[in-house]
Length: 172
View 1 (cartoon, rainbow, N blue to C red):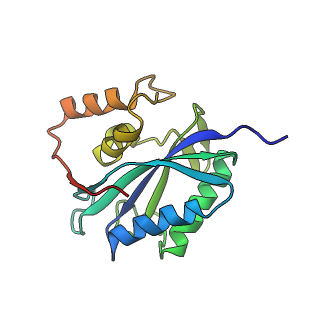
View 2: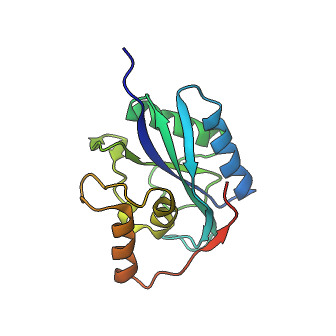
């Protein structure tokens, strides 16, 4: 018996090359799979880089998927799509430029903490470039550790920081 399909939420980002095309192609690759369904996609926002600021701005979005894959297998799908788009991961290199970045944010209401896989994404509640598009498609989704909705996490982040408003672009 197959497990029931669950909702999973991912963040998409790109700041090298044709950024919009990279996001479109990642979603297309997901849509072509029989084991993942793309249910909803946020608008695209343009955001400045964090950490290393000597790089181009990012295009970011979020998507709601449904899948019967376990979290580790879904992560492997995302990593494979990144690799197909020229993503090279360098150990110890964080916040660098990338052709494509796909992060698994939430997987149903599961909490997973194992080498190479942490769900919910450990930094999502601190990142406006994740929360803004995620709140557009899943404002009531509850963070399984913090017990707050995505909308509440975004409100908290906005009140704690003087967040720069992102630039919205046409939806995917």
